[in-house]
Length: 85
Image (cartoon, rainbow, N blue to C red):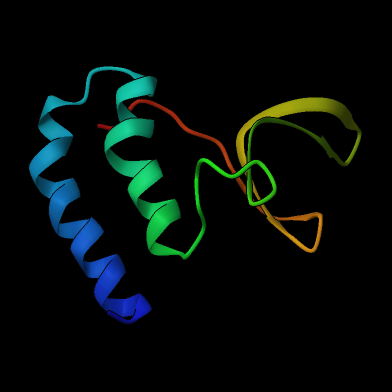
């Protein structure tokens, strides 16, 4: 399955799940982890995906984001989760 098909499948499942999501953790479990997998990352491999990553943004230092997707040891994508809906 190619990336577009993977993302379409995640989006389709998300539509079915979103009404049942009542917390940030449920959002991560039902929406974010499947999306990370669809992008080709192993969400359980800490070399690929780092949960609770400390990131520096402009003048704000040490801010935590929910996930960092890593490439060659550097963060390529930062993900901050909130409750769906």
